[in-house]
Image (tube, rainbow, N blue to C red):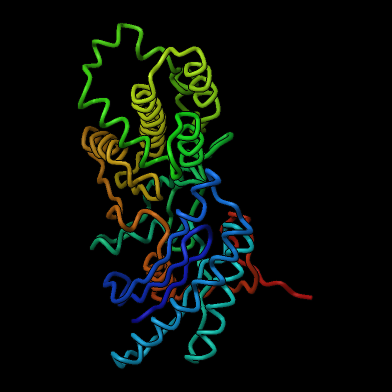
Length: 346
């Protein structure tokens, strides 16, 4: 089965042509990082306009690839929720046009489920039930994956998402957008150049542990407090930037890992899937891998190149839907992150 996936929920314009949910045949992508860098974050109006400009060439390249390789597509899949509505509209209308041109069915896809589906692009297979963690610029949530199209949210952030917190922390530290890679790089440089013991016994107390003392049944995330603590630590010149980057990353990773541990104990699930752009962070990947190893849990995560938004993950989700005879009906886009698909009727 051949599926063409279209992703435009945020700041990546992407298309993916995937065979049988795992073999990536073609994956053109345009990232808007340089466009948004000067603003320190994503400007929705600019993102929508950039999608409009770039999808024309991405679609042209994809149609040429299909024609030159005599490929017959079976489905078009497209992200319809959640995301920036203007950006989603561009991708959705593009998908409608391609589906009409190729005379094939259109499959609406949930963005978060597409992230979990990305593990199939690394040769893995979604198994159910599983515990799922989605960590990105817009989401930090825990799910029980009961089956295709059947995800139950059991933990969410009270304020910022982890990726958003990293971007804001990077701004405080004077680093460029996006914040995650910049903080990871600075933290690594700090480790290479400094012995942590030389920072003093109270080094780790400069930033607080996040929600450490809450009930072990509490699976909520929160990143606003540590962001505020970082602001005051820098204002009082208590921490140089590389040390602050290291400590902020450490506290964030500890908090996420602690909640995953709580969720695994609570659910007793033996498969854990972690996805989303923040999973490109090596420290977080290693922390979650080591945690699962210690608990006898199978840890699965996409390759780093498929952690951030991309077209193949949307195609993989579309394949999973079609394979399981799930054909969502939704003819509009929305920022709503519920897993209910519905049609707009006038």
